Length: 256
Image 1 (cartoon, one colour):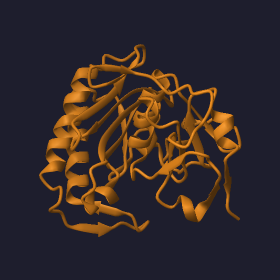
Image 2 (cartoon, helix red, strand yellow):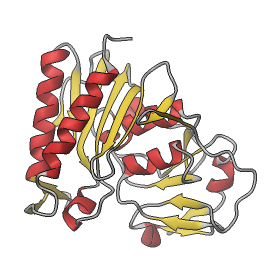
Image 3 (cartoon, helix red, strand yellow):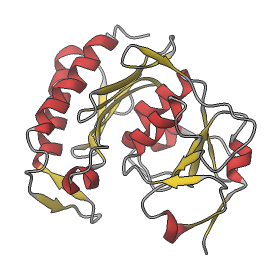
Image 4 (cartoon, helix red, strand yellow):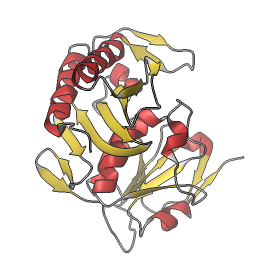
């Protein structure tokens, strides 16, 4: 493993969160080419994170939502989303976060996700368990599903999917937050549609360390190396405990 200090990465995430909070509820927004929102906070936080990474690990590659894909042929590539959930951020909703993931040879190996409004920091490195702040977390391994169990879905799920899940669905407006709430055993699972690696990298490390897995809606494994060039997921994915993946897949189908 690289000489990455997980505590230092948490400091970067908190620094980014403090920077973004200065803009929260008082920020101008603009449309990107894909019609998604971007703010000055997104730009400044990503610039700060890239500066920290370059100073500490100049041999590593970096890819990010706002400044694009860099040297992805390196052994280690950082995949960062300065504000995951920008739509929630500009709407004044609290579930947005700073997401910092590290890939090794195309596979997630370390992740830190910080939700500034809640002051929650989720993290995991390549070897240890997953944590929310100082508390170890793990996925929910329910044998049955009742009406109080919930599944995280995207905000456009009603347009893209037919869902017969017998519990509740909730849209958190942040893919990184979706994975955190599955990892901590709050959500039974998450359905994720359109996403890039910077949305997923940190959360995948945390989910893995918490005992969770990700599968495509077809049941296929997710090949993250294919996403290093910035392309989106080839198909929707489900995140959950291994024992729950096939059950949740059975409740979801894509609309024609």
